[in-house]
Amino acid sequence: MAAILTCLFKSFQWIPVLFINAVIVWSYYAYVLVLCFESVKSPFERAVYLILYHPFFVMLMLAYWRTICASAVLVPSQFFLSRADREALDNGDPKEILEKVSRKLPVVTQTVSGAARYCDVCQAIKPDRCHHCSMCRKCILKMDHHCPWVNNCVGFSNYKFFLLFLFYAILYTLYVTATVTKYFIAFWNNSLDGDGKLHILFLFFVSLMFCISLWSLFGYHLYLTGNNKTTLESFRVPHFYYGPNKDGFSLGSAIKNAEQVLGLNKWYWFLPVSTSIGDGVHFPLLNQPEEDSLLNAQQRWMEEGELDMQEEQPNDDDDKQESSTVAIDMSPAELVHENEVETQMPCAHRAKPDVLAVQEDDIQDGTAL
Image 1: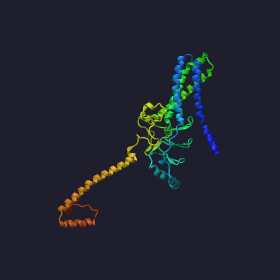
Image 2: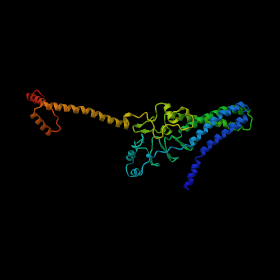
Image 3: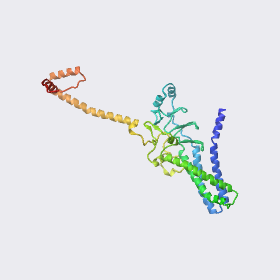
Image 4: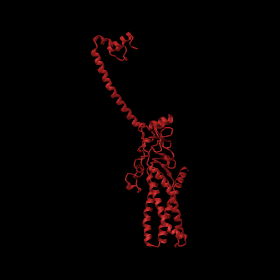
Protein backbone atom coordinates (compact mmCIF):
# COMPACT_ATOMS: atom_id res chain seq x y z
CA MET A 1 0.00 0.00 0.00
CA ALA A 2 2.80 2.40 0.87
CA ALA A 3 4.50 1.72 -2.46
CA ILE A 4 1.26 2.42 -4.33
CA LEU A 5 0.71 5.69 -2.50
CA THR A 6 4.30 6.73 -3.19
CA CYS A 7 3.86 5.97 -6.89
CA LEU A 8 0.62 7.95 -7.03
CA PHE A 9 2.24 10.87 -5.23
CA LYS A 10 5.13 10.92 -7.70
CA SER A 11 2.67 10.77 -10.59
CA PHE A 12 0.74 13.78 -9.27
CA GLN A 13 3.98 15.74 -9.09
CA TRP A 14 4.22 15.64 -12.88
CA ILE A 15 0.85 17.35 -13.40
CA PRO A 16 2.30 20.92 -13.34
CA VAL A 17 4.99 19.85 -15.82
CA LEU A 18 2.39 18.35 -18.15
CA PHE A 19 0.33 21.52 -17.88
CA ILE A 20 3.25 23.79 -18.87
CA ASN A 21 4.17 21.51 -21.77
CA ALA A 22 0.56 21.41 -22.92
CA VAL A 23 0.40 25.22 -22.92
CA ILE A 24 3.65 25.47 -24.91
CA VAL A 25 2.55 22.86 -27.46
CA TRP A 26 -0.84 24.54 -27.84
CA SER A 27 0.86 27.92 -28.31
CA TYR A 28 2.96 26.37 -31.09
CA TYR A 29 -0.18 25.11 -32.81
CA ALA A 30 -2.02 28.41 -32.38
CA TYR A 31 0.90 30.52 -33.61
CA VAL A 32 2.28 28.42 -36.47
CA LEU A 33 -0.80 26.74 -37.91
CA VAL A 34 -3.61 29.10 -37.01
CA LEU A 35 -1.93 32.50 -37.09
CA CYS A 36 0.82 32.12 -39.68
CA PHE A 37 -0.84 29.73 -42.15
CA GLU A 38 -4.47 30.86 -41.81
CA SER A 39 -4.54 34.50 -40.75
CA VAL A 40 -1.32 35.95 -42.18
CA LYS A 41 -1.86 36.62 -45.89
CA SER A 42 1.56 37.99 -46.84
CA PRO A 43 4.11 35.24 -47.62
CA PHE A 44 6.97 37.54 -46.62
CA GLU A 45 5.38 38.38 -43.27
CA ARG A 46 4.66 34.69 -42.67
CA ALA A 47 8.26 33.72 -43.40
CA VAL A 48 9.63 36.41 -41.06
CA TYR A 49 7.29 35.35 -38.28
CA LEU A 50 8.24 31.67 -38.59
CA ILE A 51 11.99 32.27 -38.87
CA LEU A 52 12.10 34.46 -35.76
CA TYR A 53 9.64 32.33 -33.81
CA HIS A 54 11.40 28.97 -33.89
CA PRO A 55 14.72 29.98 -32.24
CA PHE A 56 12.77 31.30 -29.22
CA PHE A 57 10.69 28.13 -29.12
CA VAL A 58 13.68 25.77 -29.37
CA MET A 59 15.76 27.58 -26.72
CA LEU A 60 12.76 27.72 -24.39
CA MET A 61 12.17 23.97 -24.64
CA LEU A 62 15.87 23.12 -24.26
CA ALA A 63 16.28 25.26 -21.13
CA TYR A 64 13.02 23.97 -19.66
CA TRP A 65 13.81 20.29 -20.11
CA ARG A 66 17.39 20.68 -18.98
CA THR A 67 16.02 22.18 -15.76
CA ILE A 68 13.69 19.20 -15.39
CA CYS A 69 16.18 16.46 -16.23
CA ALA A 70 19.23 17.80 -14.41
CA SER A 71 20.00 15.45 -11.56
CA ALA A 72 21.17 16.90 -8.27
CA VAL A 73 24.86 16.54 -7.45
CA LEU A 74 25.29 14.13 -4.55
CA VAL A 75 26.76 15.24 -1.25
CA PRO A 76 30.35 13.94 -0.99
CA SER A 77 30.81 10.83 1.10
CA GLN A 78 33.10 12.49 3.66
CA PHE A 79 30.15 14.57 4.91
CA PHE A 80 28.23 11.46 6.00
CA LEU A 81 28.78 10.21 9.54
CA SER A 82 30.46 6.89 10.06
CA ARG A 83 28.85 4.17 12.15
CA ALA A 84 31.10 5.02 15.08
CA ASP A 85 30.17 8.69 14.83
CA ARG A 86 26.45 7.85 14.69
CA GLU A 87 26.75 5.68 17.78
CA ALA A 88 28.66 8.39 19.60
CA LEU A 89 26.03 10.89 18.50
CA ASP A 90 23.28 8.78 20.05
CA ASN A 91 25.13 8.28 23.33
CA GLY A 92 27.08 11.51 23.79
CA ASP A 93 26.76 15.26 23.42
CA PRO A 94 25.49 15.90 19.85
CA LYS A 95 26.89 19.42 19.59
CA GLU A 96 30.36 18.39 20.71
CA ILE A 97 30.50 15.35 18.43
CA LEU A 98 29.21 17.22 15.37
CA GLU A 99 31.68 20.02 16.05
CA LYS A 100 34.50 17.50 16.18
CA VAL A 101 33.45 15.92 12.86
CA SER A 102 32.85 19.25 11.10
CA ARG A 103 36.39 20.45 11.90
CA LYS A 104 37.69 18.01 9.30
CA LEU A 105 35.31 19.31 6.60
CA PRO A 106 35.39 22.44 4.41
CA VAL A 107 32.45 24.21 6.07
CA VAL A 108 32.27 27.80 7.29
CA THR A 109 28.55 28.12 8.06
CA GLN A 110 26.74 26.91 11.14
CA THR A 111 23.40 27.14 12.91
CA VAL A 112 22.18 30.17 14.84
CA SER A 113 23.25 28.51 18.08
CA GLY A 114 26.77 27.92 16.77
CA ALA A 115 26.41 24.17 16.17
CA ALA A 116 27.33 22.29 13.00
CA ARG A 117 24.57 22.08 10.36
CA TYR A 118 23.41 18.47 10.46
CA CYS A 119 20.73 16.60 8.51
CA ASP A 120 18.93 14.04 10.65
CA VAL A 121 17.38 12.34 7.60
CA CYS A 122 20.55 11.91 5.56
CA GLN A 123 22.74 11.62 8.69
CA ALA A 124 25.34 13.95 7.20
CA ILE A 125 26.96 17.27 7.93
CA LYS A 126 25.44 19.76 5.51
CA PRO A 127 27.94 21.44 3.19
CA ASP A 128 27.76 25.23 2.92
CA ARG A 129 24.53 26.42 1.25
CA CYS A 130 23.17 22.86 1.24
CA HIS A 131 19.64 22.12 2.48
CA HIS A 132 17.42 19.09 2.75
CA CYS A 133 14.43 19.01 0.38
CA SER A 134 11.40 17.28 1.84
CA MET A 135 9.94 16.75 -1.66
CA CYS A 136 13.09 15.21 -3.18
CA ARG A 137 13.92 13.53 0.17
CA LYS A 138 17.62 14.31 -0.05
CA CYS A 139 20.10 17.11 0.56
CA ILE A 140 20.56 19.48 -2.38
CA LEU A 141 23.84 21.32 -2.93
CA LYS A 142 23.39 25.11 -3.05
CA MET A 143 19.65 24.66 -2.89
CA ASP A 144 17.57 27.60 -4.10
CA HIS A 145 14.02 26.21 -3.93
CA HIS A 146 11.88 23.29 -5.03
CA CYS A 147 9.93 24.23 -8.16
CA PRO A 148 6.74 22.23 -8.82
CA TRP A 149 6.62 23.54 -12.42
CA VAL A 150 9.76 21.56 -13.24
CA ASN A 151 9.21 18.81 -10.61
CA ASN A 152 12.77 19.25 -9.47
CA CYS A 153 14.87 21.12 -6.99
CA VAL A 154 16.59 24.20 -8.34
CA GLY A 155 20.13 24.17 -7.03
CA PHE A 156 23.77 24.05 -8.04
CA SER A 157 23.31 21.57 -10.91
CA ASN A 158 20.46 23.36 -12.74
CA TYR A 159 20.20 26.96 -11.50
CA LYS A 160 21.68 28.30 -14.75
CA PHE A 161 19.12 26.29 -16.75
CA PHE A 162 16.35 27.69 -14.58
CA LEU A 163 17.53 31.26 -15.23
CA LEU A 164 17.67 30.60 -18.98
CA PHE A 165 14.21 29.04 -18.87
CA LEU A 166 12.80 32.23 -17.37
CA PHE A 167 14.78 34.37 -19.80
CA TYR A 168 13.66 32.54 -22.95
CA ALA A 169 10.11 32.21 -21.63
CA ILE A 170 9.97 36.02 -21.38
CA LEU A 171 11.41 36.44 -24.88
CA TYR A 172 9.01 33.84 -26.26
CA THR A 173 5.89 35.32 -24.71
CA LEU A 174 7.00 38.87 -25.52
CA TYR A 175 7.56 37.97 -29.17
CA VAL A 176 4.24 36.14 -29.43
CA THR A 177 2.38 39.04 -27.79
CA ALA A 178 4.01 41.60 -30.10
CA THR A 179 3.26 39.73 -33.31
CA VAL A 180 -0.28 38.63 -32.35
CA THR A 181 -1.41 42.13 -31.23
CA LYS A 182 -2.14 43.21 -34.82
CA TYR A 183 -4.47 40.27 -35.38
CA PHE A 184 -6.02 40.57 -31.94
CA ILE A 185 -7.06 44.13 -32.85
CA ALA A 186 -8.44 42.83 -36.13
CA PHE A 187 -10.43 40.21 -34.21
CA TRP A 188 -11.75 42.93 -31.91
CA ASN A 189 -12.89 44.93 -34.94
CA ASN A 190 -14.53 41.86 -36.54
CA SER A 191 -12.20 42.09 -39.52
CA LEU A 192 -10.24 38.88 -38.93
CA ASP A 193 -10.90 36.01 -41.30
CA GLY A 194 -10.47 32.29 -40.55
CA ASP A 195 -11.82 29.64 -38.24
CA GLY A 196 -9.17 30.03 -35.52
CA LYS A 197 -10.25 33.36 -34.11
CA LEU A 198 -10.57 32.03 -30.56
CA HIS A 199 -7.08 30.55 -30.71
CA ILE A 200 -5.65 33.96 -31.57
CA LEU A 201 -7.70 35.60 -28.81
CA PHE A 202 -6.50 33.16 -26.13
CA LEU A 203 -2.95 33.18 -27.49
CA PHE A 204 -2.76 36.94 -26.99
CA PHE A 205 -4.09 36.88 -23.41
CA VAL A 206 -2.11 33.81 -22.30
CA SER A 207 1.19 35.09 -23.69
CA LEU A 208 0.60 38.55 -22.19
CA MET A 209 -0.29 37.09 -18.80
CA PHE A 210 2.77 34.83 -18.68
CA CYS A 211 5.04 37.63 -19.88
CA ILE A 212 3.95 39.99 -17.10
CA SER A 213 4.13 37.34 -14.37
CA LEU A 214 7.54 36.04 -15.43
CA TRP A 215 9.15 39.48 -15.43
CA SER A 216 8.89 39.82 -11.66
CA LEU A 217 10.22 36.30 -11.04
CA PHE A 218 13.08 36.73 -13.49
CA GLY A 219 13.99 40.13 -12.04
CA TYR A 220 14.10 38.67 -8.55
CA HIS A 221 16.45 35.88 -9.62
CA LEU A 222 18.65 38.37 -11.46
CA TYR A 223 18.98 40.22 -8.17
CA LEU A 224 19.89 36.97 -6.40
CA THR A 225 22.45 36.07 -9.07
CA GLY A 226 24.04 39.52 -8.98
CA ASN A 227 24.46 39.24 -5.20
CA ASN A 228 25.43 35.55 -5.15
CA LYS A 229 22.47 34.55 -3.02
CA THR A 230 19.83 31.86 -3.10
CA THR A 231 16.15 32.19 -2.37
CA LEU A 232 16.63 30.46 0.99
CA GLU A 233 19.54 32.73 1.90
CA SER A 234 17.51 35.83 1.08
CA PHE A 235 14.90 34.81 3.66
CA ARG A 236 17.30 33.21 6.16
CA VAL A 237 20.63 34.95 6.62
CA PRO A 238 23.50 32.42 6.66
CA HIS A 239 25.48 32.26 9.90
CA PHE A 240 29.24 31.97 9.73
CA TYR A 241 31.65 31.22 12.56
CA TYR A 242 32.09 34.99 12.98
CA GLY A 243 28.34 35.72 12.96
CA PRO A 244 25.49 36.31 10.48
CA ASN A 245 26.31 37.93 7.15
CA LYS A 246 23.71 38.43 4.42
CA ASP A 247 26.46 39.09 1.85
CA GLY A 248 28.80 36.39 3.08
CA PHE A 249 29.13 34.69 -0.32
CA SER A 250 29.19 37.84 -2.45
CA LEU A 251 32.40 38.44 -4.40
CA GLY A 252 32.05 42.21 -4.51
CA SER A 253 30.70 42.78 -8.04
CA ALA A 254 27.65 41.62 -9.99
CA ILE A 255 29.80 40.27 -12.84
CA LYS A 256 31.92 38.07 -10.57
CA ASN A 257 28.80 36.83 -8.81
CA ALA A 258 27.11 36.07 -12.13
CA GLU A 259 30.18 34.16 -13.30
CA GLN A 260 29.70 31.73 -10.42
CA VAL A 261 26.42 30.65 -12.04
CA LEU A 262 26.90 31.36 -15.76
CA GLY A 263 30.61 30.61 -16.09
CA LEU A 264 33.70 32.54 -17.10
CA ASN A 265 33.14 32.31 -20.87
CA LYS A 266 30.45 34.86 -21.72
CA TRP A 267 29.79 33.20 -25.08
CA TYR A 268 28.15 30.33 -23.19
CA TRP A 269 26.06 32.44 -20.87
CA PHE A 270 22.92 32.16 -23.00
CA LEU A 271 23.34 28.52 -23.96
CA PRO A 272 21.77 25.71 -21.88
CA VAL A 273 25.11 24.01 -21.16
CA SER A 274 26.75 23.43 -17.79
CA THR A 275 29.31 26.18 -17.18
CA SER A 276 28.83 26.97 -13.47
CA ILE A 277 32.02 27.39 -11.44
CA GLY A 278 32.83 25.05 -8.58
CA ASP A 279 31.54 21.75 -7.27
CA GLY A 280 28.67 22.91 -5.07
CA VAL A 281 30.70 22.34 -1.89
CA HIS A 282 33.54 24.87 -1.95
CA PHE A 283 32.72 28.56 -2.38
CA PRO A 284 35.12 31.52 -2.55
CA LEU A 285 34.73 34.00 0.29
CA LEU A 286 35.50 37.68 -0.06
CA ASN A 287 34.07 38.91 3.26
CA GLN A 288 36.00 36.47 5.44
CA PRO A 289 37.53 38.44 8.35
CA GLU A 290 41.24 37.69 8.54
CA GLU A 291 41.45 38.05 12.30
CA ASP A 292 38.63 35.54 12.78
CA SER A 293 39.85 32.91 10.37
CA LEU A 294 41.05 29.77 12.10
CA LEU A 295 43.76 29.21 9.53
CA ASN A 296 44.94 32.79 9.68
CA ALA A 297 44.87 32.65 13.47
CA GLN A 298 47.01 29.53 13.45
CA GLN A 299 49.46 31.14 11.08
CA ARG A 300 49.51 34.26 13.25
CA TRP A 301 50.22 32.22 16.38
CA MET A 302 53.08 30.46 14.62
CA GLU A 303 54.50 33.76 13.41
CA GLU A 304 54.23 35.30 16.87
CA GLY A 305 55.93 32.26 18.36
CA GLU A 306 58.77 32.56 15.88
CA LEU A 307 59.12 36.27 16.65
CA ASP A 308 59.21 35.57 20.37
CA MET A 309 61.91 32.99 19.86
CA GLN A 310 63.87 35.45 17.76
CA GLU A 311 63.51 38.13 20.44
CA GLU A 312 64.51 35.75 23.22
CA GLN A 313 67.58 34.52 21.39
CA PRO A 314 69.51 37.86 21.48
CA ASN A 315 68.60 38.31 25.16
CA ASP A 316 70.04 34.92 25.97
CA ASP A 317 73.21 35.78 24.10
CA ASP A 318 73.47 39.12 25.98
CA ASP A 319 73.00 37.33 29.30
CA LYS A 320 75.73 34.86 28.41
CA GLN A 321 78.08 37.64 27.36
CA GLU A 322 77.29 39.62 30.53
CA SER A 323 77.83 36.61 32.80
CA SER A 324 81.10 35.77 31.09
CA THR A 325 82.28 39.38 31.49
CA VAL A 326 81.38 39.39 35.16
CA ALA A 327 83.12 36.07 35.67
CA ILE A 328 86.31 37.43 34.13
CA ASP A 329 86.27 40.51 36.39
CA MET A 330 85.64 38.46 39.54
CA SER A 331 88.30 36.87 41.70
CA PRO A 332 88.33 33.09 42.40
CA ALA A 333 86.98 33.65 45.94
CA GLU A 334 84.11 35.76 44.64
CA LEU A 335 83.29 33.13 42.01
CA VAL A 336 83.02 30.48 44.72
CA HIS A 337 80.76 32.77 46.76
CA GLU A 338 78.63 33.46 43.67
CA ASN A 339 78.17 29.76 42.94
CA GLU A 340 77.05 29.15 46.50
CA VAL A 341 74.44 31.92 46.22
CA GLU A 342 73.16 30.45 42.94
CA THR A 343 72.92 27.02 44.51
CA GLN A 344 70.85 28.33 47.41
CA MET A 345 68.67 30.61 45.30
CA PRO A 346 68.40 29.15 41.81
CA CYS A 347 65.78 31.69 40.67
CA ALA A 348 67.57 34.82 41.96
CA HIS A 349 68.87 37.31 39.44
CA ARG A 350 72.62 37.61 39.35
CA ALA A 351 73.96 41.17 39.91
CA LYS A 352 77.45 42.64 39.66
CA PRO A 353 79.41 42.59 42.96
CA ASP A 354 80.55 46.19 42.70
CA VAL A 355 76.96 47.36 42.33
CA LEU A 356 75.96 45.43 45.44
CA ALA A 357 78.85 46.99 47.40
CA VAL A 358 77.80 50.50 46.46
CA GLN A 359 74.24 49.82 47.52
CA GLU A 360 75.34 48.48 50.94
CA ASP A 361 77.59 51.52 51.58
CA ASP A 362 74.77 53.86 50.61
CA ILE A 363 72.41 52.15 52.99
CA GLN A 364 74.89 52.43 55.85
CA ASP A 365 75.50 56.12 55.14
CA GLY A 366 71.75 56.74 54.87
CA THR A 367 72.02 58.15 51.33
CA ALA A 368 69.92 55.42 49.75
CA LEU A 369 66.17 55.21 50.26
